[in-house]
Amino acid sequence: MKSASVKFERKTPYFAFCLKLVSLIGLLCFPSIIKAQENESIPKSSQDIKMEIENSNPSDSQDSGQESNLEDDDEAVERFVRDTDNEIFDAQPSGDKLLLNLEDCLKMAVLNNKEVKATDYAIENMEWKLKEAQPRGSPTFEYKFDAAPAPRDADRAIGSFFDGDITYLQRGSITMAIPVFTFGKLSLAQDLAKVGISAEKEKQVQKKNEVLSKVKKLYFGILLAKDLKELLQDADNQLEKEIERRSEDPQGNPVEVVRMKLYRYEVLSRLSEVEKKGYLAMEGLRIMMGLRPGTNFELNDRHLKPVDFELKDFEYYNHIAKKFRPKSRLVDMGLQAKALQYRLEKRKAAPDIGVGAGFEFGRTTNEVENIAFDDDFNDPFNYTRAFLGVRVKGEIGPKTYIAKTRQARAEYFKVAMEKQAADEGLELDLKEAYLSVQQGEKNVKNSKMALKTARQFVFITKSSQELGVGNEKDYSDALQTYMLSRGRYLEAVFSYNSAVATLVEKMGGVSVKD
Image 1 (cartoon, one colour):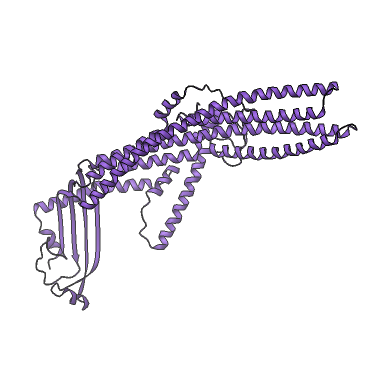
Image 2 (tube, helix red, strand yellow):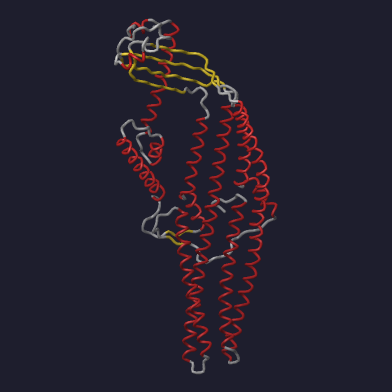
């Protein structure tokens, strides 16, 4: 067996050139990689903590060390969530009450809502996938190291091994590949990643639309609960006074007193329900705005009013929805992605062409006897090899290739058919929202006229009673009618405002300024 020094001395100029080239590339690439990971391992903010978790290297220690690393990751996650909360809420006063109008609530929801903020990481994920699909000019390395006992007599390898006549073998290799030409597969993969980024951005817009629409409805719901609470409390006070007056009147009708008591109990029950829904709406709005639990805030508006909205022709909203609605754009992107996937599957049979280089070595602690060839390219135990050249790599499986391309084509046709149905369904969904606004506008007008008539009914019955020609039952019925008309008007306004918020969401135009 030749010694290691002899092995290294026996080099050709080509061999030396390959070895130096591989070493030079390793020196150029590995320090930058190590430096980048060292920089990412020093968290300075919640973003650095998140990157530390994402780029953490597998531990080389035993099971106990791995468990401790998992615990460290859990602590890092908790720190990330805690620091994120601090970033969101540092600008908010701790003791003073926040006075918010609708625009303030919408702005806070866009800035602080965690569902909206989570979409930023979905976009970041797709951006990294795009970088992953851009390997041209960037080397990839594969490395391997083996250590095992080996027989010292090559002619009787098995017998020598079981007789204990063995030596210690170490061998390793590192190969490098730089892709240069892939017959369009890399460009298609990049196009797919770009479509994915666009789709995630549309999903972010869609999530903002949903959140802002919910904020509007919660805001209007809180005002509805506040007005209904005032109405029911006023009704309870009026009923209590009227019951007391009639109970003290010796000529009063006991039946009417009992009936008013029953009606009062119903009012109190409804008041309790309104208070519960108002509390839940306030908590829901707090969560949507990203405020901490227990944050003291109230709405600037005191009463529920119809929003100022001019309803236009349906074609106007349909045109805008087809152009800007995220769901409509996502359907188009889905079809585009399936078309790119089909083209990519068809090109997977083509090889990848690039530059390849590598370095291999093998060493034993003792000499191995009876080896037929002891040069570097034939000795299986002691060798030093390097290479540089063109690398062509591919995989051909006719049955698998045909099956995958047919699957991709079928998926494309399926999505194309679903797109046609989805376009019709989205238009119908928009039409329903449009008709709801139209109907809500009419309901507000009708309920407002009914409320005006109920006021007249109360005035007439009250005046008649004071003149001595009226009936107590008529006045009692008039009060109930007024309370019901007032409540129905408020509910009609809430339904109309909610319908407007839904229409704006469906057309894809929700923004803070809406």
